[in-house]
Image (cartoon, rainbow, N blue to C red):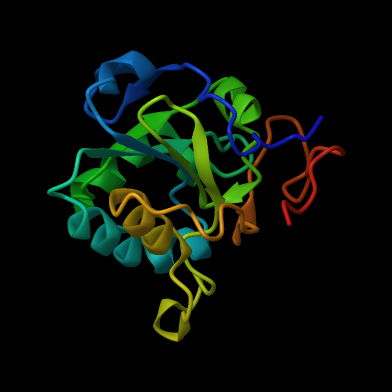
Length: 193
């Protein structure tokens, strides 16, 4: 069995606290046609440099029935910048147009099979996975990006077209797992394609 969710699999449920202090679960977004869940963090340069491209994608699809949810599962013991308090500060400073939730136990990251930050998962109305992987081909240097995979997948979905490339390899720092070395990856984790 693959570590990361496979295309067609259902979104695992969650109960996570947002930077707004509220608790969120999967069922609260049942009215949305599309749900984008992405594993992210505060300190990773791939995240920091590509956040504005992610913002552009969120704003581009703002008129569609879609919800974007960022989840930070990184161990704050590995990198203190990923603590909940720093998440709250990050949202205040940057006013990102997505929910930002804390996966303190890392159980949600494990259920989804998050490999890197950022790692995107796109689900349809039935909450079946239709795309997973990167947002762009160069998140660390977004001005050099030539492929906008998340944008393409969402455009195809809202045009009722098949997703031409449903899987790409996420590009970024690995998820920082509690009690593990900063560069540790689960042994069953591997590239998606």
